[in-house]
Length: 232
Image 1: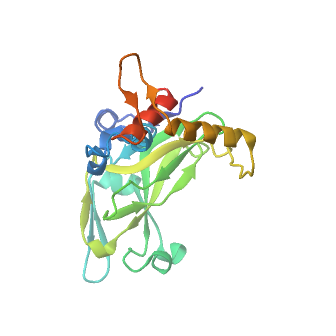
Image 2 (image 1 turned 60 degrees about the vertical axis):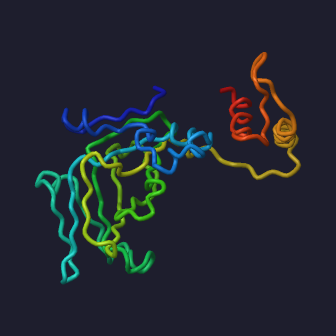
C-alpha cells in the first residue's frame, strides 16, 4: 500500500459526492489567484501537495448576553460530531487571550483513513484566513486512531457565525514524521548543490532551440529558472 486512503465511517453517499476530501487547489485563496502571484512555484507546488477536508454539515454558533455559547445544527450531528474540551482543562483564554471562547470545540468527522506504515496526516488551519471565526489547532494523527478529529478554537470577539456544509474547514497533509533534519557545516554535497543553483542564476539557459532564453533577472525569470531546474 502506497496511498493514504480516506473513506466514510458510515455509508453516506450525499457527503461522499458533495463534500469529499479534495485537493487544496479547489480552494485557492484569491490572493494566490492574482496574475503576479499565481505563477510562483512555491505556492503552486504548495497547494498541489495538500488537501482540504470541507465542513459536512451546517453549524451556527451564537453567544448570548449571559456569556453562554449556543450551537444550532442538525440533531444527528449535535450528538455525533460535536464535543467540547472544557476551559478548565484547556485554559484557552490564559494562553491565547480573552478574544477566544473558553472551551475548545472538538469536531469528530465522518472520515477515517489508512496510511502506509510510518506515514501520518498533519492537520492545521487554513492559510490566509486571518479573520476566521474558527481556528483548527494543528496536530499530527496516525491511523491507529483512524477517525479524523479536530480541536478548534472559536473567536468570541468576532460574534455569531455560521460554517456551511462545503466550506473549507482544515488542511490535511501527508507526512512522514520519522524523517529528521541535519544541521551541517562545510558539507560538500550541500555546498556543491547550492553552488550549482547560484551559477545557474548568473547564466541564461535555453529552453529549446530558437526559444527565448531564461534569465532570473527578467519578469518571472526566477520562476522559469526554478521550474527548468526542477524538470517541469
